[in-house]
Length: 122
Image 1 (cartoon, helix red, strand yellow):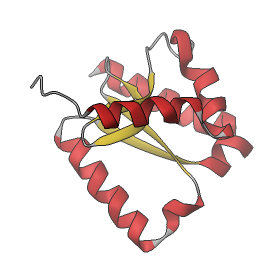
Image 2 (tube, one colour):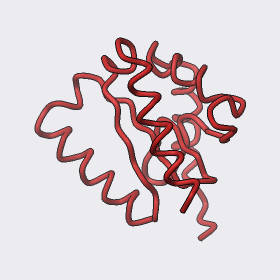
Image 3 (spheres, one colour):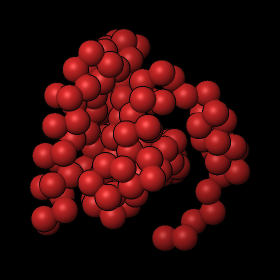
């Protein structure tokens, strides 16, 4: 399974870490350094051929933060394919709207806490 990851993909992921949106930055402040449930999260992590917003290897969780552009028909279809691919690898994918992360942070984090708790048990 140790396939060589495309160096361009790694470079792009790195550049994305340096140009994070406000929402990604907020979520990273919550997740980084094992601050959330003592789980180690990575941001803009490559799971070829995709780059996921946040990833926790320990519990197999992918967190995606979606802006308005994810509401178009094409994006919904693309996101569904992407989720299907990641789930086929045995990962769980959760998605949160940027607006909800900013305006209802506590609700999003409570949901995330429940998801992580469930995955830690199994």
